Every structure is written in structure tokens, then in C-alpha cells.
Length: 452
Image 1 (cartoon, rainbow, N blue to C red):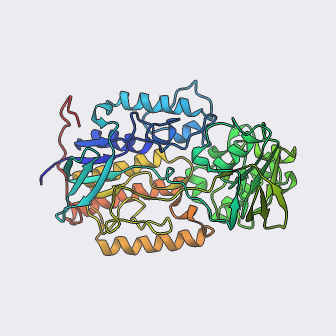
Image 2: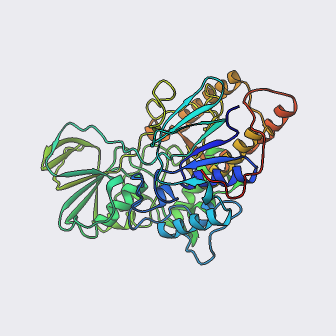
Image 3: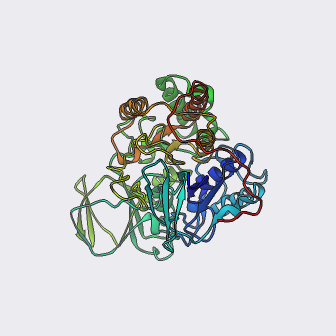
């Protein structure tokens, strides 16, 4: 083996969590970050060019659900902290666990390819190539904008929500936001306070959840126990809670989706229902055609529009993999438990999930599993078993969720956490039985003061 080290790509929330876990397991690693600081998507105006944070961004999950297991957020933080507070939390996290010294900043990974013997060659932007025993990918999936292809042409300014920072420049204009996810609703709400008119277009609508219900953050109503109930009972419980908290959203003017509450990712907003009810945001169906300075919608209406902001999601992509190595199709990746590609030994993905809840604690669970795989405490099932379980999981997900590029990596928070923990237990048994599936990196103390 030419190198006992692991390469971590990205120092966002998933990457720093993986780095801390590997360090605790005695696995030596290098972490490469394109930007000059940690935080990834939570660093506003990140110089890596990949952050989608806007100036007013706050969490849409509560702080207790987002925090890492052994590093709670400060007591003085509000229930839904601002992005600047989250970044400060991440900075404190890497310093507390002393992982910053293993991160090489302002370094782009340009190529990652297997050597054929289970190891990986990693090429950096200065053309240096290093050999690694394993690679952990944590580059995020909210950075490569996906734009719709509507017929016609538009004369005004059109941009993706990834470019949005503030409402400056929207004053007195007719603004159309396309997409009713969390970012789209936040941007439409902010635009409505300065724009002449604000429209929000949605193809199938979404279930709108308030940030609080009966004085309690909405996500705290989901527990490990409630998540084990049949989906029908979970849905009925949440519907009853929403009726008490705000009533039917259609009475405010936000269309009721045809899909049920747990068949698509909901949108969390404290503002949308009131702003639609006040006439500050006008709901529209899907865009039918762009007509210069106007936009035609599926209901036959036509509106004058000065600016379009597309909050239409992101493509899952890995620019450092050659197409023959790994190329997601239609935003679908076939990874075992969303972490392990069965056909690519010693390659792991952290945080490549879209949970009903925060990614960070789940990425931490994934990292613990991966660390135990690397040190040999756990083993993986054989490739055929993994591929069979991937197909079964995909079929289950397709039955559960509406067909959408947004729902290719969807998981439920507590059930997925339990699933990864079961994989650790199963993996320990496989390791004891002598199952061979992946190369093992012998744990060793990371040398004090080592650098990348």
C-alpha cells in the first residue's frame, strides 16, 4: 500500500464532521477544501464559489436537531440560528476537536481515479498527484444549479437562486420566483417586501409547515418513537397538528398539493401563508411560456415580469470524477445506504442525502460507519448483496415519493439514523466472521503537528 492515508474532499459541514470522526478513530487523513475557510454552504459569499447562502438565511431545522452529537450549539443561540451563527459553531467545532491543521485550504481536487488495486490517485490543482488508500467525498450537493428549459425567451434578468444574496435591486419590479422549496419561499417572502409585485410559481405545490406549532419548533414533534409508526398514522398526526397550528393552507391562497404530506419534501416557512393571505405574494401554476417581458402560466394567465429567480434545485455532480468512473444520471446515484458505491472499493460519500431534518447528525453517523469500515472493525456485505439492497431501497423510495429529481436521495431522519446504526452492528458481525469486502486501513495515531 503506497499510502496509509484517507483523502477527504470538502470541508463543509459533512467534511469537517468526517474529519473529526476519522481523527477520533486514529485514521490518518488529508482534507482538501477549495475555499479559504470551512463551512461550505454555510459560509456566506464563500470564495469557493459554491455557497448558496443568502444574507438573511436562517436554519429551517431547529438547532438541537442540527447539532453534532458531542458538540451542542450554544444555549444563547435562538431556536433557528442565522447562517453567521452556524458558521461560528462550525469554526468552534474544528478548533475544539483540533482538525483544522489537517485541512489544506484554497486547494481544488481536479481528478480522482482508481489505480486498479483498490487505491486512489488524487490530483490537485497544482498538478500534484497523491496516492490514497481511500477517498471520502463530502463536496455537497447544493452548488451546481439546475435550470428549467421553458419555451420562448425572456428579456429581463433571469438567475438561479444560487446567485441570490439580498433583495437589493428588486425594488419596484415585478418579480417571479419559480419553485416552492425552502429557498424559493424565503426569497419570494423577502422580495415581496420591496418588489412592486411578487409571484411564486409551482408545478405541484408543497405542504407548508410553520416553524413553530403550539410554541414548539415543528421538527421536535418527530421522534424516534413516532417515526416507527405506520406512515398513515404519522401523516394523520402531522395533519392534525397543522390544523391546530395554522389551518388549511388553501384558505390562505396556497394551493393544496395533490400528494400527501409525507410523499414529498415539505417546505418550512413562518411567512409564506401570511404573505399570500395579505396579497403580497401571488401564487401561480407552472410556467407555460416565456414571452419577452411577459410570462404565460399553465392556467392561461399572462403577467408582466421584470426578473425571474429560479429556485429549481441542483444537479448532483462530482467534477473530479471522469465520466467512466462515476457520472450520476437524472440525479440518481446507486450507493449502498447512500454511502458506498459497490463497484468502487474504498470510495465513500458523506452527506449525500436529503433528509426530513438536518444532514449534519446523519453525516456524523455515516462517518462513524465509514471509520469502522476503514479500521476493520466493520465489514461490508458482498457486492451482490449490496446491489440487491440498493434496488430494494430505490423501489421503496419511488413508491413513497412523487417522481422528482429532488427525491432521488431522500431519507427520513430517525429511520435512516437507525439504519446506519444497524449497518455498524451488522458490519461488526461480518468482520468477526472474516468477511472480505474492502481493504482495511490499520488505525494509527495522527502525528501531532502533521500537515497536508
